[in-house]
Image 1 (tube, rainbow, N blue to C red):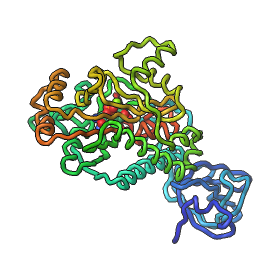
Image 2: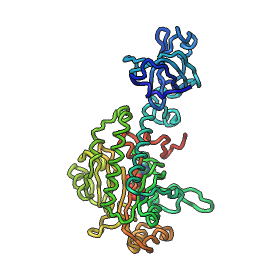
Image 3: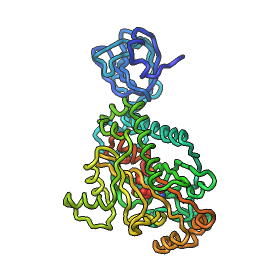
Image 4: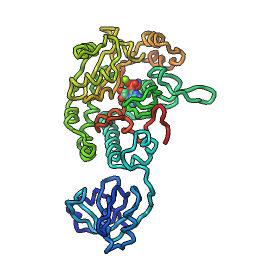
Length: 432
Ligand code: 4AD
Ligand code: MG
């Protein structure tokens, strides 16, 4: 038997044709001897009409009490029906219940923790289907951009011996007789790979033992990272804006239905297709914030609140650059014109979203890097291999990391990062 996907049935061309479909019961009601069963699959929802005059009283009675999310198979004639929720219905001449669903635990109105406990069932909804499809397109467009621009995809390790982004958020794991850590970032290994391939990128999970639960931090997230020999900071910022612009462009082109289903206002996304993005130095950012009445001094890091205020000044993504070295990682190159600051940049998404990308030019001088490692209190032996890269044919190089869920949050207009990943991990949550 041939089964159509539901989205294929929602068209005038299909009206009058006999089709078969299968999926899960999304809503149902019984009125005057007819069951109106809305069936959902990965592509859409359609109303199936089961008339007791055609298919018997018994079936209609069963459907009256059937649990949501029962799996079903139906055949019948597609009919244009302005009163049906998606404009068409299938008038069934056969209908089979494949898998019952007794007392489906999600009925609407449950609290956040209950929904997270039932995450494996909650993801069955048009909302999450739309989110996963947008994520798919983000990943696909990212890969497409790197390929077109001549970058090599590589596979860095997840089990690592030392920190990239500071000891505070490391997840320890028992590694035979030793202690190892889950990777916070592939960066240090991508820096190795540029000596072999020059322009490399990777997509890996990254792990951060974030102590507090926030709307934009996960303990496990998907990290798109790139590193290139011969690129300075400005070169790398151009890579970031072109990549993000391409991703947004493709999402707008291919996922308009999903954005609409999520109620996303796409005006802010359209501006993100145009490059270049504005660039603001940290110094200016501090001035802007002080003018807004924020009590912040030069030298402080920008937190979520400060970032949110800054985004009010822009209608598109923008870079903040040249942060004080104390608030950024040890590997960032000091600005030769002002060694108090680093050649680092963050890309902030508008509408209050804030940081989606962090990147920098890397310190390529052996002595300066060694000094920064010591200043940061790291064990020099752990970084011997990393220092070697500056000992044997060092080159100017830069890179960045983009948090896929952060980008998805902004593009899809989500309130909380937990909705950007099927199984969110954060403190206190590992099930399911
Ligand atoms: O700014 P971060 O910490 O930079 C790095 O890890 C660099 N080593 C990347 C590089 O240059 N190769 O992280 C990069 C991005 C952030 O901008 C943010 O989008 C995301 O990763 N990110 C998180 N996303 C979700 N949950 C968390 N806890 C995140 N921490 C960082
Ligand atoms: Mg950062």
